Image (tube, rainbow, N blue to C red; front, side):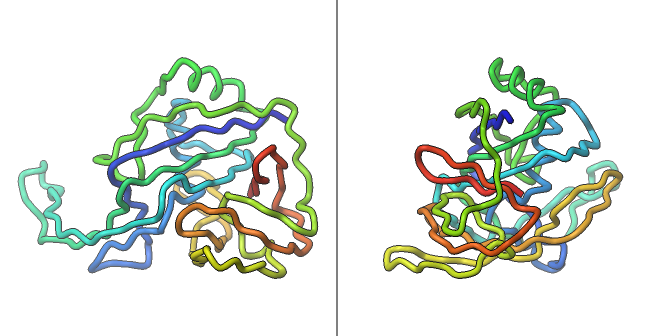
Length: 225
């Protein structure tokens, strides 16, 4: 299996939580479905549905700020809505791992030529980003996770039996992510994650889970979901 790793960075990002209304709160990092949509934008597929596996790594610490904004209304863009408070992620940077036999070669060609069919952004149209290829893992071995895993990627909660806590880590849990995009704005299942706020490695003991895959690397392993 070929696994692609590419980086996306920006000044701002906003991945809105659908359960927030008056204040638009954001997930603390790019969601699996937003990462899939970004891949679809690179490929030029407007309603991108794929069985590909995704892994997410934080390259910068998670930092957020609340900002009041006036957004253009729907009447031809001439009327302003009332001021809306939004939570924005500051200096976001992510490494996205992607394994997909169907679209992998096409995505690789576009990343190598630094092209995308549609604009790519981090959750909102004013948070543009340019994906940059980091590495291609040729012949990667995707297996069930071993009993003990050290990883710099975010970890699905369902995989964790026990966390080996370390004193210089800031552990966080984030929940309510949509897991699978089924097309036509429909989603299936949800997923929760454990992550380290500054992107440092996490060590866990795993439990049996048939859906999460693991890719060992020379540095730290990658959890793909």
